[in-house]
Every structure is written in structure tokens, then in C-alpha cells.
Length: 447
Image (cartoon, rainbow, N blue to C red):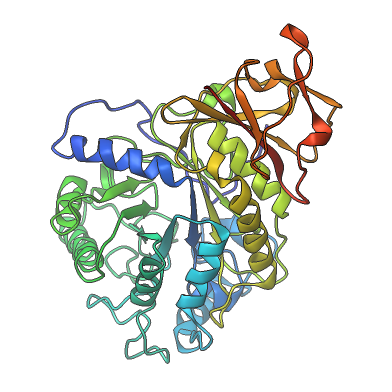
């Protein structure tokens, strides 16, 4: 059995909800738009970058897995105290969000998500609900990072969304200031302390109001902490969504892993669904470029080849792909991530026609091919990774091409000659340009 990482929350209420809601018609159109984008980037950023550890997880005493390889401090009390005080050190002096946006545009990203707040409760935006934030009295960095990110990416033509953790381990209304052993959940039973929980719900709603009312156009509200929001930890999600959409009427809300009305699309984490696992809802695979979502020194990064193969596999199955980038404490991308992003973008410059704005008809294709389809179904695209074993002949049946179809090399735009006839009709593999990275691409069009 495959071991599931401790930071991956299991899905709840996975049954497809096809009931009509006031936002249903709007979402049908918006999710078509979303499926056109195909490729996004998510930034995990905060005090955990300063610490160089896996996001916020070491703060949770019950999440022992997060401290197994390298605990930030030996005992949990010292760990938390030292971690909270990192606000005094976190000051990304080299932060240039215009450069972030430029690199991401070259990489081919069509949308971005930015962490407004992770589970640790540290805010990357100018919230009025707490001083545990950038730009506040406790912070040496006098800026609003969310504002800068949104402005730069919107200027670059990249859609923007806010990641927000519904759990907040810094909030005294979520983790009480007592000796209780703390885990990822609220440290008390909200039904036994309803007045405290009511204050937490109000805190969350006020922050959602700030994010959706003070930062211009917001395309996505991506809600994490898939144990919080329903049941005992009821955040009155219908009211939360109403607050968010009062100023963002076209907002796509992703209440991750919670199912139901407010999980507008689903987000398999660190995996590509197998053919028999493809969700019935619109979906997006979430995969970090490194081993972790945030910055960790000496991280191991996936190769550009693997990233391109992943993108093709996801899109051919009908999904979007969002890649995780963890900026450094100084506010820059690592050189490894930058290199991979630029190489990915270089491949997409030539082959992106077969990726963006396509749809899927997933099946078990022959000879390692992956196919995508134009929305009018008059053209489809066949991709095969350069690492796959290739033969001298590419039979038309492998790429679902009729002999009368116009078959062209996506890299050159040149038509490819069809040899033979019937079941033996083929194109020569040697006549299809092979890129240095990624996959070959062939366009098949009906006359």
C-alpha cells in the first residue's frame, strides 16, 4: 500500500452534488473558462520559508510525521515559541513580484494562487484582524505581499486566486492558550465553548471579506484545512460564500476535500488519477516542483521532463495542473525552479496549441501516445514523450488519424507525409521533429 503523506487530507462527501444553486449557471460558464487555462502555479510562502521546514506542520504536536526527519526544535514548546518569533526575521528584501509574474508568464502559467495564510496563522496580506502579518507592528517588512502579487500577475494577464487556510493555529479562538495537546483541529470542542467558536467564525468571515473586497479581481478562493468548516467545526460555509461573492460574483470557490456545494472543482494532491479514478467533477492535480510546497534548503526537484510528461498526462485525462513553487526567504525563486519553469515555457511555446483550451476523451492509447481534442472536435493532438520507446513507423491508427486527415508536426507546422494505406498507413517517426525535452506533438485535422 502506498503511504499517504501526513499533510494530505482525505476527501469528504465525495458524491457528486448535481443540485441547482443560485450560482450554478455562473459556475458552469466559469468552469469552462477554468478548463481552458490548463496550467497554474501555487505559491506557498511564509515563516516556514524562513525556518526552511515543511510549511506549518511542525507546530501541530499530533502531526509527528512533520518532525521525524528534522525537527525545527527538540521540544514542542520551544519550537512554537521560536517559530512564532520568526515574524521578526521574515523580510523578503529581494521580493520582485513583477519578476515572478514575468517568469510565470514565460513558463506558460495562465493562473496563480497565493497563500494569504497557512495553518500557522501568519498573514501575507494587510488584515485588520491580527498583527500576526507582514506590514504590521511586529513585522520588519512594510508591505502587502498579496497586493503586490495580485497587481503584478493581473498586469501580466494571469488570473489570480487566494489560498486561505480555514484553520488558524495562532488564533486564540482556534488553539486555546492552555496546556492541551494541540493537533490540526481546534483545541477544544466548539459545541462546549460556542461563544469562543462564534468569535472564530466571525474572525474567518472578516478575513474572507478583506481578501475578496480589498484586492481587486479575485478569480479563485482556494480554502484549505480539509478538516475544518463542517460538522463540529462549522464555519457557516453558505454565509462565507455569500460574503466572498458579494464583491466577486464570478468567484470560483474550492473548499478542498469537503465535497458539496462549495467545492466547485476537486484537487487530487500529489497524484494523477488513473483512468478508473478520473473525477466526475472538474478537477486539478496539485503537484509541487520540489518535494515540498514551500521553500526547504537542499530540496529535491522534479526534472523538466517529468513536469512536461505530467502536464500532458493530466490534460489528456481532462484535468488542469497546478505546480507548486516555494519562494526563498529573500523573496526569489530558486535557480532550479526558475530553470524548470523557463524550459517548460519553451516547450509550450511550440506545443501549447495542443494543451490550452483543449478537452479530453481519455482511454488507454496505444504505443504511449496521449491525445487531446479541440473543443469543436475537428482537431486532435497526439503527444508522445521523448523518453518513450519509438519505432520507425507511427501508424495512423495509433494517433486516431484517418488517411484523408491533414497531419502536421506541431513543432514546425509542416504537413507530414502518409505512407502505405489502410491498416498499414503510417508517418515516418524520423520526419517528426523531436525536441530536446518533453514530447513530440502531432496535429490531426479533418478537412
